[in-house]
Length: 298
Length: 325
Image (cartoon, rainbow over all chains, first blue to last red; front, side, top):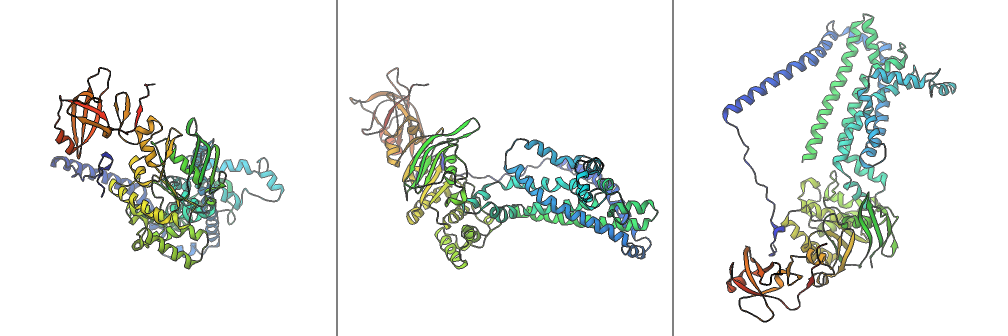
């Protein structure tokens, strides 16, 4: 529209390039490799995951519905499921609150010890849950634990009761939400938040109206992962709970106990329930993923 | 004066982004902060907006000290290079954001948003998401959003930098017209001297964290305060020991008394312009580049190897070259 031309004014044009195709023989070789890889993957996943899990369901219903109904009317089983639900709910609530805070801290601010914090956040992923359990015992033991003795004197028992189970479950599932949120926060950037601030929004308003909606799919994804991990937790909980039947036995601990007591039908029934919850979680997650991706590309 | 910057300094580690900067920005004008990338102009704009803290110095907005004030209390409109659109909100919701934060009545918000969308020609797009807009449309939405809160000053950080050339030109012409309608004190950052010269009432040239010169486009172009300003505002060449503009040199095919005799070494045609390089006969003289209109060159009829006489058009800006440091 203007007449003054210079090198700045040369419009950038994107040239569509035809996709390079190799000679026919090469395509064939690639096709063969693709088929081979596909079959390796299918056989691997089938042998390692799909087949064994299917067997669990198979065994659950091998004797008909009666054992299943019996299992899920057993007050001890219901109690263990209730405890798992409580532990998972606390784990999700605590890890969501702390996960969002720590992620914001890691992405938005520079501070000494940031790398150390970043590494510590990953620790629960790499350390065996048994170690997590033992470390909690060391801290909260009523005889020589740093926190345990004073808390016991105040009449509050952590070990061998619900608080320890919640602690262990939360610890183990801690990194999942943070590892989901950090890249999302990095990608979103600070521009939108700064724009909101300059338009008069306070920090809480900006957080609620701009930050949370921007990261919601990643957050939801993290929460689902956290929930699945919390429900399945076994090792750390086993150490800190004392495994008291009907009191501190979570669903996974119950499965182990029933299995060793030759009550396999019940063990399989509970296992199936846990597997179903995980499968629902995975499906939810993949749907969320697809949705989040289609949003960001639209 | 709408914005008063006194002795502002800012460092990032050992890098000095701004060093004792003093600037006054007049009320109701469109002012450009012009300079090369990394020169500190964006940092200065962000300090005015409160998005960055100055290490030293003070900022006054309409006579009130704003130095320690957080961004949300400055009532400043800010437009980002990459739009910073709220991606999960419709265009109308984006524009309404500042008003909703201020808890204005719903009716008032709707009327104001309608008015602003009309102003930026986005009324048909009110219910779209930002991802469904082009870059130019997004930036107009960002501008409406910033104007919605009736800011005391409007700050734009390389507002057209992410757009392609054609849209950039349209938008800057449009910004000039918009400013003539709205009259809010506006400061925009640019590294494009043509953009600054075309759009701004006033230009502040910033380089290496310092203000090189401030003034109207004419003052800056015609009477540059330093060789840097002269070189940054347009093409330059050396002639008779001075830095001058290539289009200020006359080329003659006959000898004149005040002319410098030279031999044409290169003729380069660039669209409507012809760039002619000539080597002065005096051994000390360095090569001079002259810019001629295509038609003028044709009339002159000179080519490589010909002898010409060069002289500076009377009244042209010239500046003694600084010896190489």
